[in-house]
Image (tube, rainbow, N blue to C red; front, side):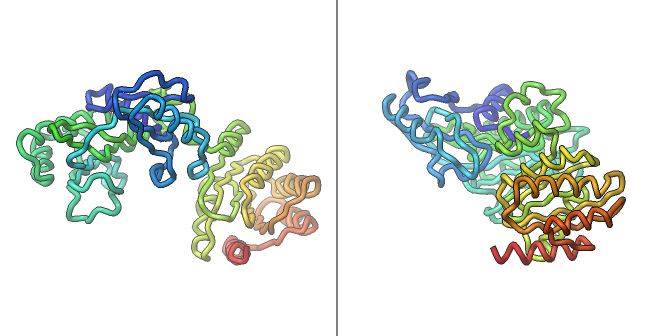
Length: 368
């Protein structure tokens, strides 16, 4: 689960990492006083807020309320802004980068730091990034922190503060079952104070049973993803234009890969699982239509699932509600011939293999 910045800051503060004072508001009237100049940030679970106009500054209470009203209600990358973080503006003399993430290939946490803070780590030259793996058995060691301080070119005073933040970050990483904790920038003020200027936190979904406090709100779901979850349907919105509906997470991911191979881009990840309930298929297809794909690619392998039952659900939606985009269907398995007959009569473009279907869907998407 990806936390909003305000909750990420709270997490860091609980573990002793210095953060600027501030709080989230959902209405301009909730701002009753400010501690001097403040920064107002849209609380959405995506980056690029500044470029979208979701970060503004204010020097007075009236100005802060005005800026908050401008940000609230904005839509940033598909997310409507429902709350704004109003925080103390810190003066920054220097920016660093600091993070700890799970390195799945190495099977252990990875500490990363850079003297090039304030920008995406992907754009920082590799030679300017300090990396060290942390053994989960013995933890973060003093020599690793000394190596980090040396790589960042810190003097003795700053080295002590920055290594203390890194130590606390690792404590938080373990205690909160995080997949990623990132501070960017880790700001150094003109007075020589080290403060977390931002906070990005991703908590391992499989550990949420140990952290029920994080389940409230689930801010990283789009409205359609939330609607699908309420219907018990696995649905993820992506940035492509081909609506993918398949059964089984493995087949759904393989379908996305097949589309990519043929130059197409999946716009949804919709997994029907093992259902052959026509009503659930109908609901899934309706949600997929709401995502407004240019093409729909349905890829079903009926091992447990009856293909003809799935086809009946799709046919029912198309017959009663219509569909205004091409639908490519590849369906194999139990009762596949009857399913193919139903889908052909419904006007769908049928394919006999996943590759054939992916190629057809990709070609159609390029013509839209």
